[in-house]
Image (cartoon, rainbow, N blue to C red; front, side):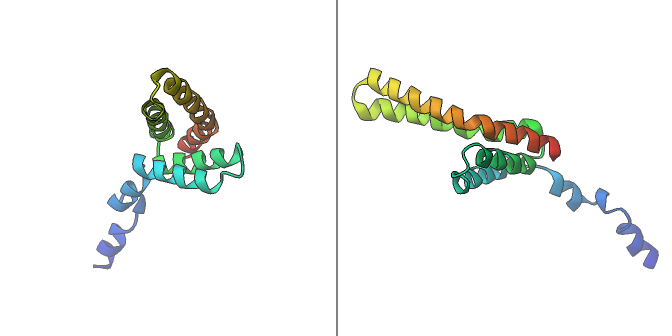
Length: 123
């Protein structure tokens, strides 16, 4: 009986809970990146890099980390483009304003993406 108990706990790395704990989550990575980037806004580049690093580790892989960094930025840029176009009443002016907002979003994604790649490698 003691051998069975000891044998089942002998190698915890093959236990299902240990394998599931290492698996990353896209939504958790995006949430961590969002919360940390909001909390660390006062560190212009370093704050976004730290948010990407933590989010990349939560993602579990480089591909998931890149998706977690780029997907929200893409959605925000598209939403800003359409909202600016609709709210101004002048489609050309709204498109220019939306494009400007999209450029600002992409500029903030560069350090976040760099941190996400490093975090994905470290995961």
